[in-house]
Length: 89
Image 1 (cartoon, rainbow, N blue to C red):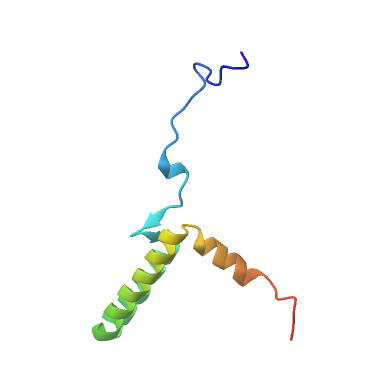
Image 2 (image 1 turned 90 degrees about the horizontal axis):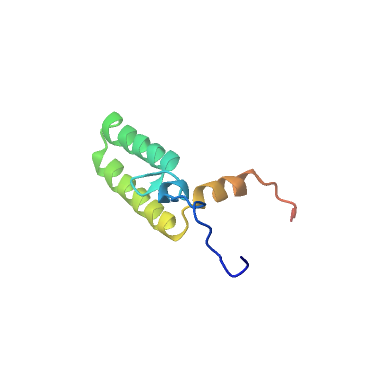
C-alpha cells in the first residue's frame, strides 16, 4: 500500500476557474469596471474623446501587463495601501 500513490475513486477534476481570480477583459474585475466607468465618464460625459479613449486604453494596457505578471496584484496593492508606515523620517 505504501508504494501505491493513486487510490481509485478518490479523484476529482480541478477546473482552472477555481484557481484564478475572476477577470474582466484580462484585468481584475473591480479594476476593469472602474477603468471602463472612468473612461466612459471622460469620453461621453465630458465630451473629451481625444483624452478619454487614449487614457483608458493606456490604463487598460498597463493593467493587463500587470495581471499577466501577477494575477493577484490588485489585492496586494490594496493591502499595501491599508498598512501603516512604521518608519517616520
